[in-house]
Length: 94
Image (cartoon, rainbow, N blue to C red; front, top):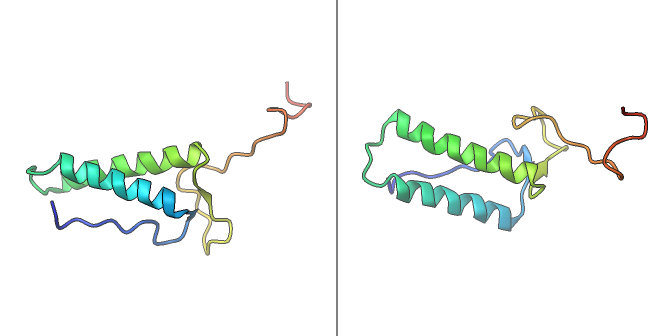
């Protein structure tokens, strides 16, 4: 598994800090270490990819990363952006 690498956000969909990039790369390394010795099959690669995707989605929902609104294409692959109101809900929402 030492031949795996991760190309993080090639379409520049998110705004990253060095800290958040390091979190993703560290998590990727944990996953690669966890699957050490397992056959390098499409199934194993999909497991790793799904776990990374869920981790990135968690970073987005936790507000550690955000969508890059200046990206060439806004596809919102992790769901529509969330808008936080000052008091939680607008006054006209029942």
